[in-house]
Amino acid sequence: MAAKCGAKVVVNDLGTSAFGEGADSRPAQKVCEEIRAAGGTAVPSFHSIAAWDSAHAIVESAVKSYGRWMSW
Image 1 (tube, rainbow, N blue to C red):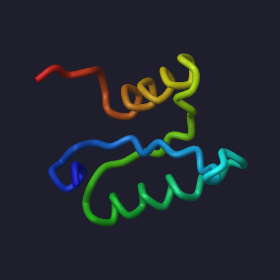
Image 2 (cartoon, rainbow, N blue to C red):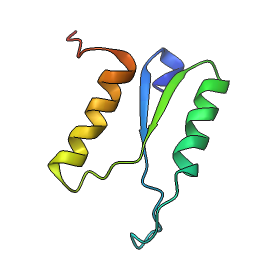
Image 3 (spheres, helix red, strand yellow):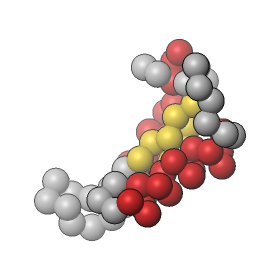
Image 4 (cartoon, helix red, strand yellow):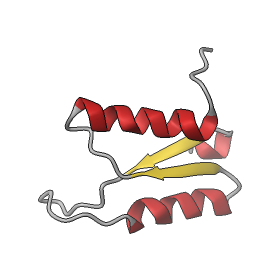
């Protein structure tokens, strides 16, 4: 929905099972492809939010892809 309204999206998904096992980049890639096909902008992220450094990497992905933080 946000992408339809022009938001630039970071799709974060480790691709683990419901039990936290494994890793698969395909789910996040697929969602990004669907957003792009609909005319939106999206990049995937495969970082965990369980630790500060990896959560920070999600924000860094957004900044590197879309530019600096913008306040409204």
